[in-house]
Length: 236
Image 1 (spheres, rainbow, N blue to C red):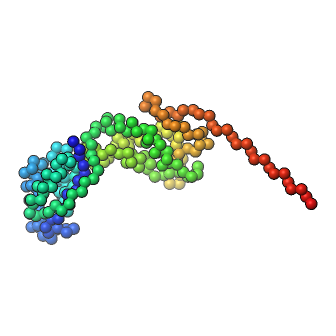
Image 2 (cartoon, rainbow, N blue to C red; image 1 turned 45 degrees about the vertical axis):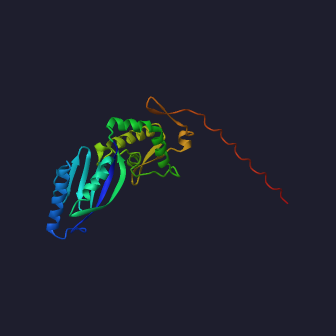
Image 3 (tube, rainbow, N blue to C red; image 1 turned 180 degrees about the vertical axis):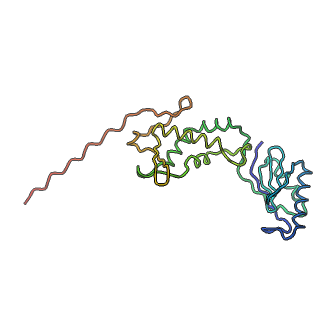
């Protein structure tokens, strides 16, 4: 069973960035509530300027007069669109399907991130690389990385991504302890960057042993012989 973020684009009578009359607003709410309740959805009335929401199992929709949006079982999208076409106060003129949401537990999510540990590590080191040792990145790197590898889940539709943020933060702490990342205080707060080769030796391939990142020791490249000075030109 696959779930996906969906927007049913709606044209509602009497609504263009605002309601033209209270009667149009009341008619829309009455029909939309009646329609979804007849299809077995549970209604939660909107308040404080928010619209109604409806839920059915792990599915949900926010009933705004310009779009009905939420996460739906893909198998139900077409049939619901057909039901919406029968409405009198609004018309569904298009359906947009966006990212997939998975039914994945916290443990399952962490396991999938763990399987990508090497890939995530390389991504962190690439994003934190700077052109000079005195340049540091002060942006929230961990949040960016966690978002890049995020798996959207039914149990986290608000996308707090607590598990992803925690995993990346722990991984970056480990890279700091091993010297693969370097941190320092800057005028804009704490900064971070990837360690230069001379600071950490040549970068070796990352391997995973018992769930931990280790670096296989390799000899440093031989030093280059100093250049010989040219003999002075003979004087005339």
